View 1 (cartoon, rainbow, N blue to C red):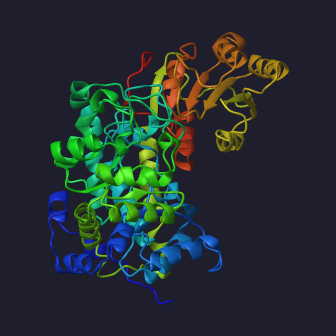
View 2 (cartoon, one colour; view 1 turned 120 degrees about the horizontal axis):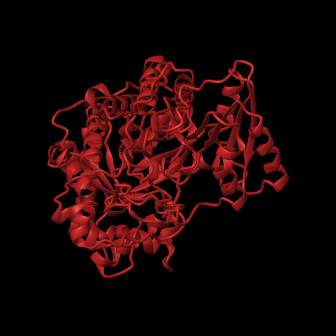
View 3 (spheres, rainbow, N blue to C red; view 1 turned 180 degrees about the horizontal axis):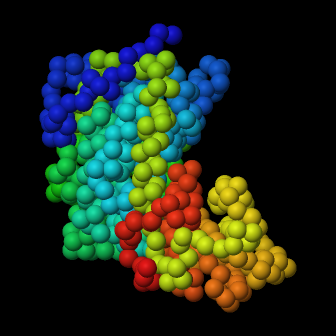
Length: 563
């Protein structure tokens, strides 16, 4: 197969605002639209999931996606987990068999490495805000865009502009830039700039706001309780800002907004939300994308086909991630044939999709150069930016006991307690290995299944410790619904200062949400890294030995944030 020419550089067009992109009536757009049958138009609205793992052409996934692309039953693909080489190869292969270029996308909130091994791994959005530097956020987005285009991806389902005002939020949390409107707007704008100035469409999500909920929409239907006044003053502001900043796409969430709609229907299926509020009132001209259609928030007695029809009727342009793309293709085609959906509405959506593809340069070059992946993806220069973010985002929540830098006798013993809220978690393991390479360390993992005698052994280890580091990777935490911790776990953590010898440094490190650090004020020194990556581990080690002073600023409100 001949290598393509990476088109990322050819699409660095300005202006890149939604108004400029989606008012374009280029001849290719209009000619392509006129040639399409109704069924081919419907296919443009469907984005199918693809595991980015290539073994051979005989695999069932490869055969299915190749056929759907060749038959015009999908207009794009969304990459899930895999590797850089496979993704680029698959992108080219599927593009080759598709008559109309495919829009290739992925959820890359934390970089291409969030999906593809071999790319640059970045910290989550809350860490970006903690670093407090929009220029650094933009630089990260530029790298994400360039790596994405190198592997054939043109749309990123990021940034997450939800305001995480509810500490009990189980699904957004560190994916949010925080709970402060100016900060979230500034960081979102920087990400949008970095992505779209480098040829990748940004997607603000999850409209009309997923931050003030207590249910994961992957598992059930969350409810946003705010009325219109509350939404105008809070949730909608980051979306208005993103629209004003020219974001190309907005993802609508699967959450009920009963005080806005009068029903418990998900926002993604509500014409009042999608067409009335987003399209007409907020004046958004770009692509409207559903959240993934396989999520359990949509399981309300409707078939997948009925969900897809309702989503189109609501005004969505793209139907994302159905379990069975062909099933929803048939359902939407049937609805158009019955007059339940007008062909005019389909035309409006498909024109926007084609306008996006034209702006991305896919009508001129849709293949990527497989021979240049190593020089463009996961480079040392890109990783240095990830390291800078990890270092600048490291946040000292409090240090009443002056535990940083960590000081204890050279022959002393460091006890590392790894605290998990679910059995089988591996978070903290790599950091424990790193500590063992530097210190005389005893590591113990405490889970809800740990028996009393194990806690007794941990207590004995702490009573003989020269220093104690408690780590956790919990992503969501609420005092009112305190995860899955057992009483033994609670009691152990709260009694740590009494167990350890007087004057022993005790440091609580979160590799996830900062909210958990607020729940255990007994631990006088607390540090948040927001995620466990090679870069954050290296930054923490520097902080432990005094090479780095944590200077991150907490992007959310905590009661006990008293350095």
